Length: 367
Image (cartoon, rainbow, N blue to C red):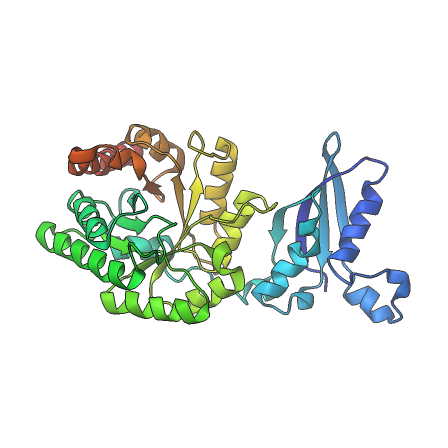
């Protein structure tokens, strides 16, 4: 019955950790004193169990709890509430890992496209994919379309909106998306390329449907979504309705949930085909070890859940391409934005250099 496992890091003294672990098990399951529960069946079948306690370092412990899968209702909100509901309010607790039993894992579809599907859409098979962003904020739809067309001419695989580009008055979604998509399609027709445009999809349920309709009519085949801004249950339902690939952005994902679990496994479980994360050595980076764990979580075999493409980003440069390809391998998408745009009038040449360097680095890695 108790087949769902969740592992936490808890800051505590050695003298208090057993009681603290028991309190966490109670809080995340029945949320009341066990002594006040009159039904023995509930204590047997609903109350979470402390499976193990290990000291990680002085004052920090690794605690694994076991939960009854039916308490999740086999849905996203229920799962998240069991894993990290009330304890998200407790500063000393971090969720670091989970193990989903087959009966719970089967309730989730995972990515619709995955790595192989993204490769099919872009026509890229033997190297990492390339990606860039339309920025800065404040550009008009026409200016953004011109920028996107230059990137497409340079051979970028996916041109995405900057994640902050939503429906501002200077670049409304309904005007921006068709114009940018058309500009990229024109560039593809001239070059024979397969560049894709990924507009940022935001809003409540009604707005999401309206903007999704606009994107579909424009011929968009990939969207950029910040799952935490949308809400994870809404994100999962959106993916189920989409016929487009999903590039997940980490905005608002700075919860006390370990990045490999949040961005690598949970986003993947709920349908992200690719997941962006701040690469080590960038503007606001994770450690090298965390980045590698995140990439592994995104790509590792996981029952029927398709692998997702890790997307290291956040202040990356063309000069670091070879290092990143060597670190992450071919099943990766490299996202470089500002470093390309800094080239100014030489944007096309800088973009081409990025694409060529990725291809060359992949060749050396594969060889």
